Length: 87
Image 1: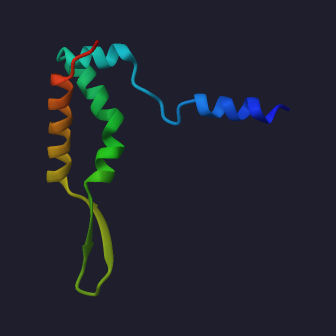
Image 2: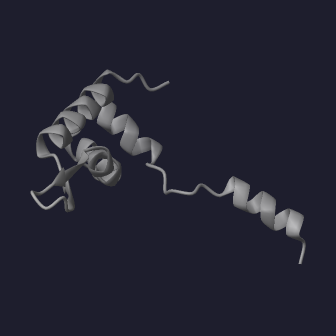
């Protein structure tokens, strides 16, 4: 087994599944289904960014998603999609 070849293959393989170009293009043109697909693609990342630590009176830590922050990030993403220029 050639380890150099397998290392090169791992470098070329994307870690995450990418959005198809057609979906991105349709989203930039305002297609609601394509915009929803982009939002679904980034929903985990948005949830991670909007997660907050809360402490109760005993000092226990709880993680929760700040819904206001999540919505604001989704709106920013939609605004960015609609202003994005596809080459």
